[in-house]
Length: 321
Image 1: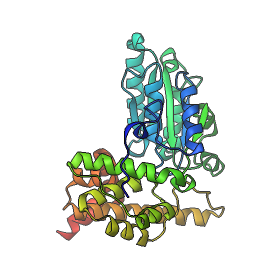
Image 2: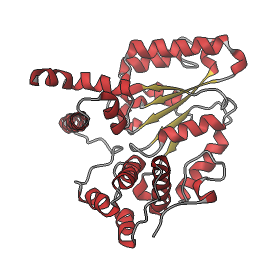
Image 3: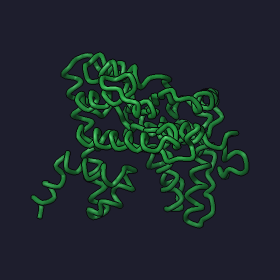
């Protein structure tokens, strides 16, 4: 059974939004088309790998400012000083180039900002503590993999900032809740990576497609694309899919916060350990080639350098020398 897609199956009607036949995705795409040409701020909420950046870029492309570049700020890799410098620079450029219209900023992982960085961001937003004319020329699209209402209750996110960025909240459904889209996406990713490598699109058996449909996909579309790439590279779909299904089951990234503070601390610590282990293994596989490791982990080179320093891995490497 071949999962290659042809013709219109590769593109939704607007050719810019996310693939999918499920009612949830069709409704989401329709809402995006309605709000894209407005200046309303948008909050994209969803588990890791559900396509938040894809939707953020689609909203920008469909907007009146779609011909100009989208400015992305990785909130996971900036401190308060860097955030202020980046935003002030963009606001200044926007004010100096009124012919460019509204500037669009994509704040990726806004839940990762500490409270002081949140305060700094709030001060630069329209109707904030220090409003100026240039701040009105910026549209904010923000993404989060956490439930910000829970983060507010726990004191980790500012309520006023939440209401400022939440003009419209789009909740992206995880892949396990839209099983009808699984084979569509797998066909797309197999065809994409086969074309990149100049190979035939792999054909999957009925048994293999059944395994794909029943898998929970805790890493969502990112996990699926990694699998498709592996299938194309190895030329062995059965082995790759069996290894996927044999992996320990992971909890989804967007989950309800436990009520006990000790459980919160334990969960955060476990998450940091898991992240550190994944980075360490990627660096080991690539013989500490940081650029290759960043590509494998699907994060920016700058973010990887920050995380290596943050987790103390650089010190561990020096100690082993």
